[in-house]
Image (tube, rainbow, N blue to C red; front, top):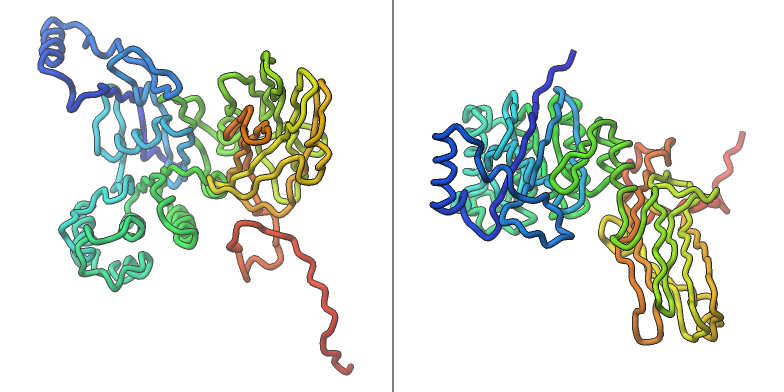
Length: 432
């Protein structure tokens, strides 16, 4: 039976905004006096959740609040959440870069962590010296590190710069070396933050493949990534964080579904990738946006070959001219395309009668695995009347394709994955 190698109990982390260290001398004296009198720390009962959409009134903010979960040996667990949810802070606490305000975290075994660019490296030392330094920190002997040196250098692709001080490295080189060191020095627990996004596409594939190998060897991985397709393929479970709190821990597919269906804007009501907006007193306004399948059901997860449609409804309150609807689609933060209704229907630039309009657009069938975000606009000649940036998200998994020829290209490069038809018009005919 597997045993927990990471155990987090009621973990909380509080920060004081606009200050350094733990606080002022007055704050420290208040804490000391309460401790002497046997009373609760007064600063633990103040503070607000880490909600970036609100300004707040308190000097204190809880970056993490009451986090509680376990990770078993050999599991790959993904930390999921929007920017500011507390993912990086949690990894820093587990890596002992910073301590918790409340609660405890237990880690059993050697820990290799890859957090911010340059973390764990001495910038004045060379790449070679930093490799041995990290091995020493992990408790490895010099001979053990030397056996891994060639594999680390080859994986990172820094052979030419091995004797150069790390401060001369680009951010990409630093990330490559940091991951190579963390993955090859055989820690029992590997903590990886989203710094993988700094590397190029080829290196990201190598990293994902290496993490798969590490998992197969029975080691434990806890990592943060916004590439939900890779997270779904690698992870057994997911931990969903929201404004510093933990909203779900369990099956990775369920965690991703909850994360994606939790999207929406302040003035809209989201329900599993369908948002309806309150009507306003304005000339043109969006009333509903959805990402649906062929049957009209709003979903957040799709597979290659599924029919995916964007549904947009909007209202025009009085007869007008030159109003158009536009939407853009991005994959993992990179814009794929932008389209608008007048591209194929120039007559829509003419007069539009007052009333409610509904349009459905079928997305192309050659999208690759990844996290897709949708932005929708109402435009008029020369200006934008309304915009909903990254209003909805959905994930696509293409691992169900090419089952007969994956040995040739298990993960085809490129932004799209068209299912092209190869028609042979000439080939040699062998005599029987």
